[in-house]
Image 1 (tube, rainbow, N blue to C red):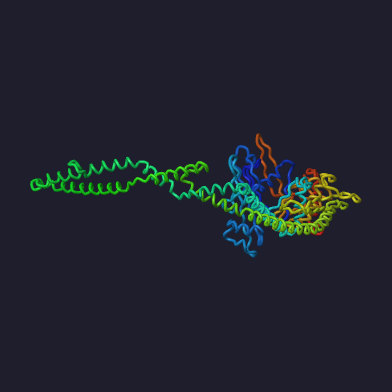
Image 2: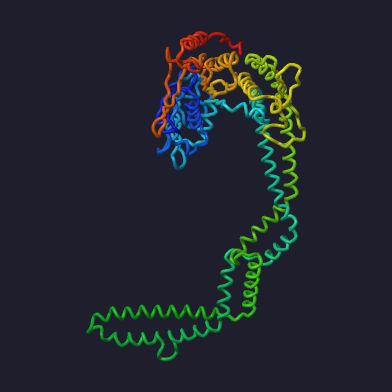
Length: 572
């Protein structure tokens, strides 16, 4: 139940706060006074697409807020707890829980993206939409204009169909689409399958090379070493001669001579002892270096065959790397990937057969669900036809009739909407065969038929706030009284709000809010006021076109006095 709506800097509303009561509330005012702006503001709180043009001129942002009360078992309770957006003080999962409060807020900046909160916690616009469908059902003033569309007609019929069947067809459609995507992924490998022989040849080339991880770098090092054999031998020989040559100028011999020259002098210069130790250490290091060089020199064995082998392997690796457009060091990884690709191709036919079977099975299951949905729709059409014709009678069209045409297509493309073509046919007069709405129904007839459909589906909106934005356009007289009775009925056990220009409708309301526009110099302001007593009588008289006459006031008072007349649910 909507308890309050707060609006600030929204279109031409500076600041407005409204409280709402249970039952049926009428929102009235002059044409262009801004009544529907209240509905637009609420729609923004329910996740409608934002527009910077909705922010009042000269303001940085619009700020909207609404407070709802959720009774036990309300459909929004479980969603809130699943999203961790519930009121911590009340357990929404308990049907016997006390009434809880739900707060919605949305800020629309003049520039930039809007922001939203649910129960004080940041929320996405998608979450606003999800909670919105569990809170409010809005019937717009142009709803009857959409009634000629096949999709809209199907939606009305499906309101009478078991929700589980609609969920089943949606699930079957999703499974079919997943199977179709899987088959498409397998089919994408068909090109690889055609190139199977070429890929196998490429794999054989890489198998023969069998380059291991990090082997290319080692081949490069070996190649550089083997190609520099003479330089290495000459360098080693010269170094060994310098370190420990047979001649008298080898480094080791020179250090030995220096040590012998200094040793006798230690008794006279004690600091020489440390220097002699340093020379001894240097000699040991020189001897170790010489030994290492001798070992390296001994390892230099001239093997032309080894050099040729390394050079051929290195050249082949570079050649294959260029062929496959990869780095030579990355050949082992490419080799492994190619092997995996060929293995997948080897399974291509089996995978395609399996994917085709899954798709066929998913389509078969979908068609079974579509037939079940068709059967349920035919049954629902019978009930809808009777209820709509009764409602049309209450709306002053007792001679009118409808027929719901349902054609099942056994070869229809898979869709979450089933395999049926649905069309509502209409006849305004007896003896006239029903024909498509767009060919025979006038604007006024479409408006009443739209109302009749709403009346026929009214039992399906338990727990929702039902909002009707000028849906009574094009009706009047006794029909207007019937509309008022319906709206009164629609609010039973809950809440209904209606923007209306009809005094007969407004008089049926439990509460009435008048919206007024106050033009000023360069600025227009809107306010709204809850009416009671004489204020309400005056507003009804204005709606009747005689606000200044005693007769008009008496007529308005008489309408209020008849408020509960004919309120039996069976009357509509």
